[in-house]
Image 1 (cartoon, helix red, strand yellow):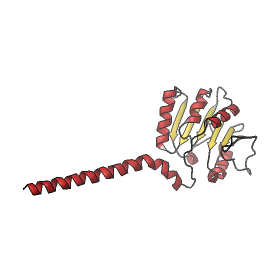
Image 2: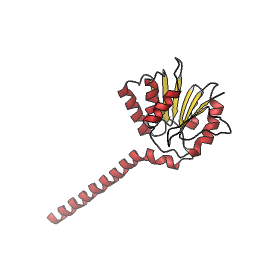
Image 3: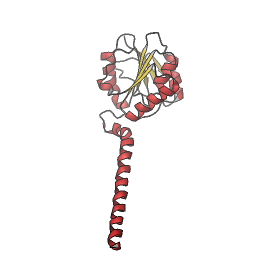
Image 4: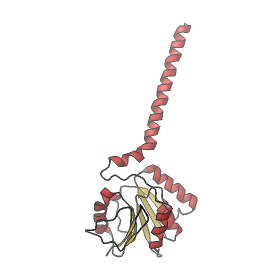
Length: 193
C-alpha cells in the first residue's frame, strides 16, 4: 500500500511540475508575443524608444495652437504623446499595436497628470483615419515609408505638420522642408500642401 501511495504522489508531483512549466511558457508567450509579432507583419516595426534628444528636437519644431491635434504613429511607450500634452497640445493621441506598450503608456500618462489630454489606442495605423489631425509624428521603419507616405498624402488636410523620425518619407510624394540632424536618429519636417 505504501509503495502505491508513493507512486501516486510521484506522478502527481510530476504532473504539477509539468503544469507549472506549461504555465510558465504560456505566460512568457503572452508577455513577449506583442514584442515578437511585429517581425511577422508586412511592415516590420520593432519597438525602439525615442531618445530624449529626439523628443527635444521634435518639440523645438512643433508649436501647438488652441485647436492642435497631434498623433504619434507607433507611439511605443508614449513618450512623444505625453511630452506633447506637457508642451501645451490640447489633444495628443498615440496608436500602437503592442497592447503592453499601450497599457504602459496609459499608466505613464496617468502618473504624469496628462491623461485628460492624451489617448492611447491599440489599433492598426493602416486602418486608422488620420484626417482629424494637424500634427503627425512618424517613427517608421525603412520598409514602410513608401506606404505611409501614400497614406499621409491621401488623408491629411492642408497645412498638416509632419515629423518623420529615423527615415524620410517617399521623396517622390514629399519634399522635406527641413532636415534636423540627431546623430543616428535624423528627423525630417514636412508640411502637407
